[in-house]
Length: 611
Image (tube, rainbow, N blue to C red; front, side, top):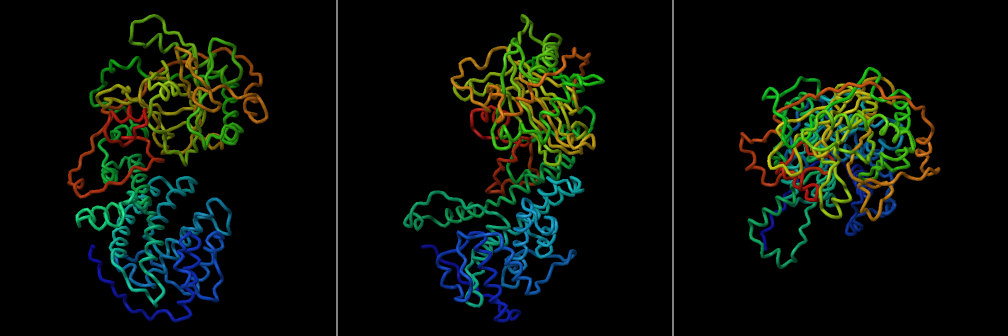
């Protein structure tokens, strides 16, 4: 059996009297109840005259009670310029833990107030939380999330700095908490388990550390582990802090947006990525010129045609069509709730372009967008072949508030049913984006790589399409593409234009619905929903629209960057120190930073997440 470390004696403290210790005990009970951390063996330590708090009856009043009780103790706030050292002594007594408990309580209130109106706005509670514990990783990280989503006058640089602080504090606090909890400590006043308090407040709260469950092997198997295996297991157990993961990743992403690629690299090296989108691509996205190291690279022979943007002074769609689409898919339109947009996976609609159109979307596609796609194929297709005939169109829409737009993952447009059921890859002949609202510099550029699913080498160049309202961009349907994060404000002051709204259309040379056993409503290439009250947006889309002839449009090539990817090197040899790298946060992973490129993108199509 492994030798147990000696119990560390606590430092005597005379700052609290008996009545104050009772207040702390009551506050701690309320806090544990709120976070669901009651243990059955704690019941014997509960004072008889305290109100019983059942775990199933947890409510918001409990965390308010914590603040009310601790506020009676006159816990000092930290001075802004006060230098705080983070080590295991940070948690050595009740007095040192009380500011942490109060900080975490205010953080819970801030989190609650983001969805429920309270007496003060969320920023007030964030401020209180950080006054008591400025190094609180979770408070810094959630504050940055809140400022990013609400756009409350904080620029991206300020938000990025907060993420960097959160990531830095998470690493330091994690090290200090692990060192402290690895040694048993005497209970203070025979009732306060400091190890438990650090575990709940810091490791489970401020760090949001996830336990690593390897399935176990029974007590006998545990006893037979050698010391090296035990140390490795303990390191792995302690390694995962969700706050550190999220803050580090967000810092890397925003630092890249801000053209601070050296500092971004520091954060990326925590994850063991092998490649990142080249810094020149990010530079170009915020208004830079072409960045082509080869002074215009030759077009990759696997690329059927060069991506292009269509435009005119009035826009590519006649104004009546354009305004109808902007209204049909406005941020507050019924479409988003009725289609359950925020909670569904990918879904789209497919129709035969050779048949009569049924609504304003299909009218716009057939009468205005399809001719531009056909023009592209006629003018720029590299393959000498008979005329390519488009028979169907698949369309879908995306909307993102500028303030919360972190881009869209790199991906390939495919026949999802064929991919999932027969493991075959098929693409539209032309993929396209109609920019409806939210266009302008820094609005989240579309990026297209000269890379196909069967590529053996990484892309050599990237085309960048800057969103402009009522402009239409198209590109070969087999190319890797995505959207960079929004780094600028909307192009106008209207509420509608504060959302980046796009209509995507994949033009197909075959009927992709043939062979589909079930076309699911709100599934890939699904049917149009019935025109009923349940799908009122379909009724609205069917309203007559005045037929207007096609606008006279012009086409232009896109800005291009080369190289497309940069290998991530580790000049300081830190990889050897990072025995357990951070896990990439799935919800934020847009493949701007990857491992095992280019194979990872194809593997991802088949559900193998090796990026």
